[in-house]
Length: 117
Image 1 (spheres, one colour):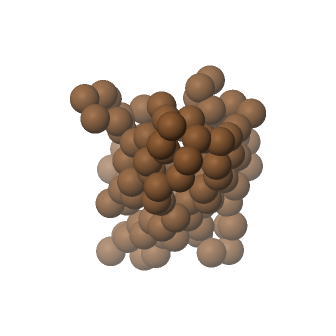
Image 2: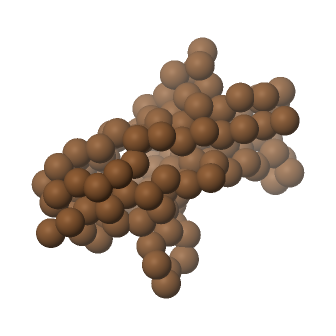
């Protein structure tokens, strides 16, 4: 049974930093990519950052230069370092793990990030 456990969310002032972690367990397949998505109230879930098995990274334009995604392959853990946070970064952040087929897509429970102005 695959489980993704996220941690690190919270309340921070604009300009501050947070580091999110997501530990995956029960993984019995090859991971193609791990990533972070977010969903703000009244908006659709959007990709924030993704890192492939080959460590290629990709970011949403809105977070480039401020967020950094990294991964500890041995621990099946993905991190999101968020700096220079803005109020518009406020959302629930979800961890995502993907295998080679759509059926092998898993989500964490989400962690709230709130940035006050």
